[in-house]
Amino acid sequence: MNVTLFPGSFNPVHNGHIALAKSLIEQHLTEEIWLSATPQNPLKAASVLLNDNQREEMLRLAVEGLEHVLVTTIEKQLPQPNYTINTLNVLAEQYPEHQFSLLIGGDNAEIITRWFKYDELLEKYQVFVYPRIDCKTVLPLQHPHLQLIEAPLFPISSTKVREAIAQGDNISEWIAPKVQEYIINNNIYK
Image (spheres, one colour):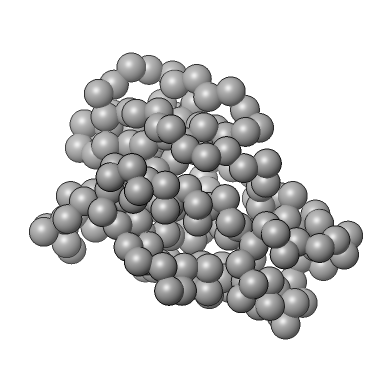
């Protein structure tokens, strides 16, 4: 089976993330999407990142009832700092019956040459790149395994969701009802 790993902070997961995952399946680019709430990204400054368990629970709530969209905790199980190539290699080893690929945003694609063992990653795995509404995606290199995809663009980001929650704004159109309920019940992002 073709499985695409979709790692991210998901701080919190929003409807754009889920629509993107469903879009890849609908376009037959993959058969399953495995979402992974990543620990702190080694290439990003420390931020207001909720703990792994809270972000994973919100992911589970967001994908509940969806076919072919799952949550994996693989990155939490690996030594830190963890690198994407290590995650994919471990997945390929644990699930030899699957062929793995990766889904990243245009912002990450622009800096992929700074990633740990990016050349090995591109040799071994297909990398799908989705455009982001907040930046013009320019791929830093031409490679047959680096592919810009057609995907719906959403004028939403986890940062905007957190800011809206902090201001007491209504976010019901941006996140799944169960995710919103979790955020309210746990009094997070205030």
